[in-house]
Length: 502
Ligand code: UN1
Image (cartoon, rainbow, N blue to C red; front, side):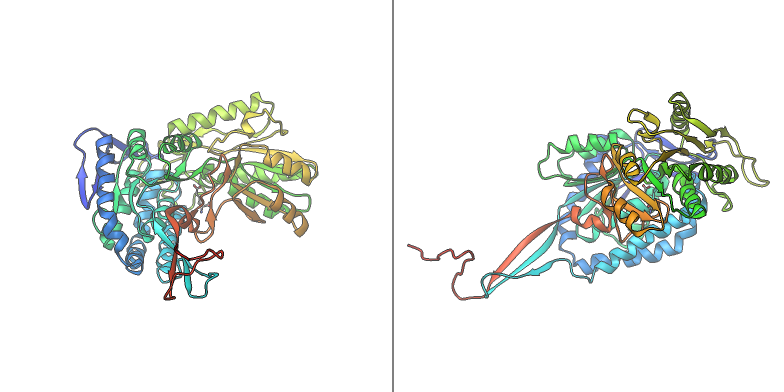
């Protein structure tokens, strides 16, 4: 049954009154998941007004009571885990087991936020004056705009909604136009958990709705994960509001570095997961694997033989490793980069191909955006576009390096800095990369994907603007205030300032 999409403003579900857009399954392009209202400027303004109106009451609600609503939400997400995973698999094409893991990741954020309700939220500081008590206390900014991508349509919204709401902000949530159904399901669960009207508002739509939301002066902070271009546009618009906070995660050309002493099987498994899990469509996915020149022949052979055997097919089939890519435009972009790699002198080890997997008996026909891994070997060069630009798909370069210094130079020679994995047995080597490379998330003897919510998540350079999400987001959604109380019966000042009033 096709879902009837609705905005959610001030606790009211609002069906489309104007234009709509469909959500289509990338594995079955003939399957429409639902039809959703195409948000306009008027809708964005209404959503922000609802969030602003709800802010004073929500801010004054006990932080512990706000947190306890997340406990209600956790119970609902546990009840709905399989349904959420199934809907997500249909809507964004990730394999259902992976979708389940994503729901669990979102649940972990909810549990984390609930747990912080009774944890300290500020600091007690000393004063030069014995009778003065000094505190650091956090205050919410006001209204947060939460703009999220299709590739993590459940966990990433929760990374942002959780800290924003528990700290007392109200929100307008605009999910990706590729995954509006899962976005709407999240808001239905917040409503069922008892979050009051106006505290969370849902705005469906495309660029127009997003742009209007960001241009609204009633928005105090914008929390964004998506492309660098959109992140840059948000930053440009937001520069017009001098106290506006923008926290953005944008783009990457993440890498695995396979050192001379690496365990080969571990390095291959870490590389395959980093490059091809989620069809290479995580923001942290590896587009590059840097391999020590002495290992690269053996590594390439093993890596390609494993990649050839990967099961790519129906996202509803738990036995598959990956499903399709998100849509036809993504397929065309990835295929253009596959061609470009050859033009730029790559030795192609495995040709990425568009294909249609066999449909299983009893399941509806698969006609979707299926693309197999494209793997090539190429020397690093400063102008080689396919190893500098983000492709966001199953497109991978194996790049040889001579020594650890060379690997650091190659790794850092992109405009991005998001995720890094080092495969080594040496603690000195590990430490060298840890200190010399540009990244937000670093891993040793692991893939460069798979972060957990209680760690900060964010990048540097074109990958992010220094405000990590998940647990780290508290710094962006609150401002710190100093609160100083004098217990003496006369005024006493710090720095030896006299109090004579003459
Ligand atoms: C993303 O790719 O946008 O670290 C988020 C990971 C996941 C989150 C990825 N926990 O791979």
